[in-house]
Length: 163
Length: 172
Image (tube, rainbow over all chains, first blue to last red; front, side):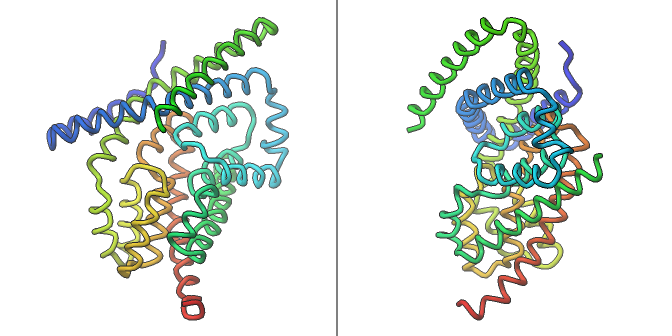
């Protein structure tokens, strides 16, 4: 099996920080490893479910269909639809990247994929009531409204630059 | 609550596995393609997941909300904007756990622009998150999105503050 250089860099990066942390504070570092193991086990089943979904997506849905809904052909409407979906969905962003990668692999446009990830992380539709309660209507509306506009701007620029 | 959820998720997973075996008994000609895609993504994920979890565990334990709040509350000017971005990238966890901290800082007089920039960075510029993006979408995609996000989030914070303060007199 071939291991990519990206994988090596990511693991080396984590290892470096782990070593630095152990030098700084052994007790805290051990606690961090416990936290890491716990969140790994927490997120593992959801992750595997997403990978099943990706497997089905890439096996049964032809790229032409994906391209029609969220690809270049779908244009502006496709991007808006995906961005709204991203704003409403509540899935951990770490799991959304493989899903986004598989969509890109199977014919989705850069713009749509970028819009999906950006609205997913920036906008919390589900947590909006809580945000309003704690930070006020005006603040929450401004933040989420501007985030949506910014997410679309970022995605369209990415589509233009990475064409 | 958490334990119950986890065992429920594993039960769902077992059901999915059984269903998958059933599906590929019906469509045997598709099973090779499914296997290839499934294991390709599974391996890619498992190769980096422990590293990503270790990094976020370290951030969770070493970066306290108090420290972040202390620095964020004091910042202003252009340096303040950059510090707000940097501070936002450090704490782990979903955005909603930042709401009370942001409220507290606003009460103490922190700038609205810095708070919005901080929240945006918290939401979408996380080191472990960027590494997963690098793995699945490539360096170009990740680097470009990161750069554009930093630029636009700062612009957004500044404009939002103008509007927020412009309407403050009429509502408060």
